[in-house]
Image (tube, rainbow, N blue to C red; front, side):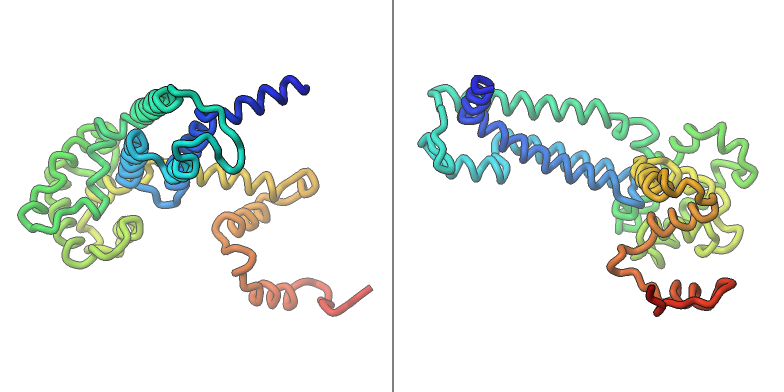
Length: 295
């Protein structure tokens, strides 16, 4: 054990090791922000694409500009060999070796992100990404007139078999006309609304006349069900395991559904107003409630 402890101590007091640890901390901070983005509700293709691009650029910038944690250590160590009153083992080639390792690590991470999420920048996902994200819509009327036309045609061609079986979708030409009407309507009256709320209103018939956007409703519905992440499902499964445990295995499906709804969609416990629930509890039931009763 003493020999192993000495080996760990020797490794942790290497200048290269200290620099590498703080480099990894900076990298993990960027990946953490990307992970939190992927866990958000109402995530869109454009938000995913922009988040990946931001993370990649941040990692590339670290090749020449150290992150905050690494920069702090570099400033504290300076040209010496001491950090937080600990003597570091620093060789003459440690800086060049560390810089080479840093470049290789960041390049590998960027290549992995590109390979893992590269399909977002090609094909149908790239075509769908800008269509229904209002931040991409141009302000200029002339640009808006032709905005998204090519992407819409690519989308309809890709989902041709699904659209052909849908009774509400009649033709691509009708969809193109509705797309133009929809752009005008949104640009003039609904540009201030969040995209997710806007398209929900469209699907429920709260925007436009009842029969005005039959084709576009089908297209919007397809885009809105494209799964960006499974974080919502994973949170639901975690809540279900916590609620229906071995000690509460007799919960009915109805009660489990109620408790899941409260857990997933309800406010935090500190913000929950229990007045209505307590009132219903006191006024219902076969027997008299005795909240002040003490054994």
